[in-house]
Image 1 (cartoon, rainbow, N blue to C red):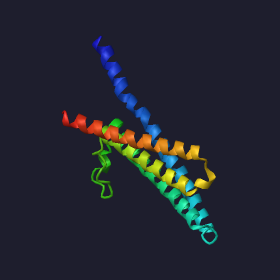
Image 2 (tube, rainbow, N blue to C red):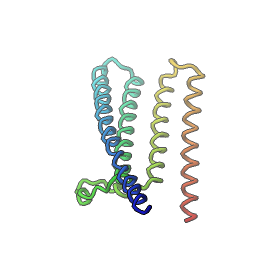
Image 3 (cartoon, helix red, strand yellow):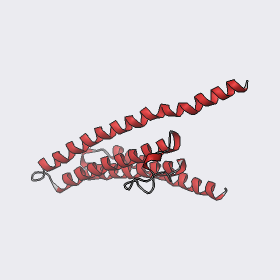
Image 4 (cartoon, rainbow, N blue to C red):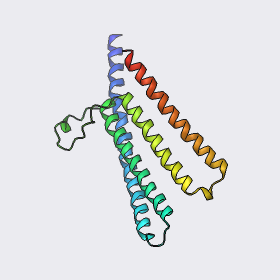
Length: 168
């Protein structure tokens, strides 16, 4: 029986490597986002003389949106890989290694994720308000409601995380 248990635990432990292709897929998603970013940026340059100030601001906010999502993917890939798959031992002494790498736990990762979602939602909401003439009051109301839901969810999660940390 001990042999079966040991074998099962080995398979279970090794199964963490099934996440490696997922993280590689996120790298490919970043390539797609880079293409999207480039398209948006070149579009802004093409319209620089004909676009209104609002259109340029909305375009820049779209670039910021993509950058935030890419930053979020980096955090998820690095911390997820190190927390759940394998330590990046060869990179611990690399001079360009970010200081936060290896120090973000699962709870910190969730807080960063929620914070990024709130920031992205806020940018989308700002873009919507700058383009409000194309949206109905109902659509804007739903967007505000969803953003407020994200905001309160983030605040509640942060409060629960803080309370749980004080209890240990």
